[in-house]
Every structure is written in structure tokens, then in C-alpha cells.
Length: 214
Image (cartoon, rainbow, N blue to C red):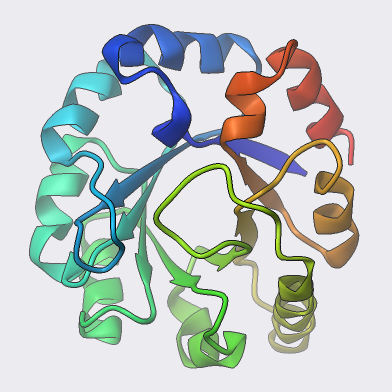
């Protein structure tokens, strides 16, 4: 399994240094949570910050747009350095057109599903997606408890992927730590986003190796 630390919980005054720390820990990619204060009750950062971070590392940037209208800013986020553009099925974006736009720019398109949304809502788009993200907390804040009852969504995605012969990646975000990571792997998850648990761990490199061994 791969690990993608979320820099939502890093020290914002030292984001460049924190990103280098993430890279030294041996992770697979970086998760950047973008919140607009409308789709979720919190606000984080936008394209200018991502543009400044992009030269710091060659790690892939998985940009998670927790936005009501993500389609309006696809180009700025791609221009800033996003490798994966990840937006919510529950947003007000035209889903198919937004996916097509992301792919037309040569980037990977991904859809995210909130806890109360049936995972089957993304099934019509799976042929065009590089990644599906299953939220195991309500999006908007770090440090929440893992919702194990979301794991059947991962299992359903695994079955649908096999049935249709697809190769999209299945990702989990929310409350992942040393105690919950194995359950994610057992359900068939390919990538876990780790936020607070990563930056609070006494040995982030050891945590990284642990997750990657699952």
C-alpha cells in the first residue's frame, strides 16, 4: 500500500521545510487539501501556495478540491503543479465535463465520495478516472476518528474494478494511523492519506515503511 501525507496538518509557517521532511520519509505522493469555506466549513490554501511548493519536491501532488465549484479553478490548480486533480462527486461541477477537462490537460482525474454518499454514485465515471477517494471522516478538518463502516465502499470499488477490468487507484482519507491502516489494506485500498498521525509520529519514516509493507 502507498502513503500520501496530507500537509493540512503541517506547520504552515514552514511548509517548504515540512515538505522536504515528508520527502525524506520515503512517501509515495503528497496530498494537498484545498478548502473553500463553502463546500466544507473551513478554508486552507489555493493555487499560489501550491505553485510555491511545487519546486520543493518531485513527489506527485494529489490536489483534493473540497470546493463547491471546482470546475472554475481546474486550470489554475494544474498550472500551479497538480498531478492528480481530485474533486467531489457532491460538488456542483459538471462531473463528466470536469473530468474531461482535467484529462485534456494531461493530468489524472479523480473523484471523492463523502461518508453519506453511496459509492455507486461514482460508478458511471470509473472508466475515465485514475483514482477514487473514499472519505473515512467528514471532510473539512484534520484529526478526526476513522469511520470503519466506510470500508465496504472500498470493497465495492475493488469488485467493480475487477468486474470491468479497470485500473483506477482506490484511496482512503481520514483518521488513518498505525492502528487503522491495516484495515484499509485488508479492504483493498491502494493508497492511504495520513495527516495528523504522520506529523505527530515520533518516527514518520518508520510509519511510512509500516504502511508500505501492508
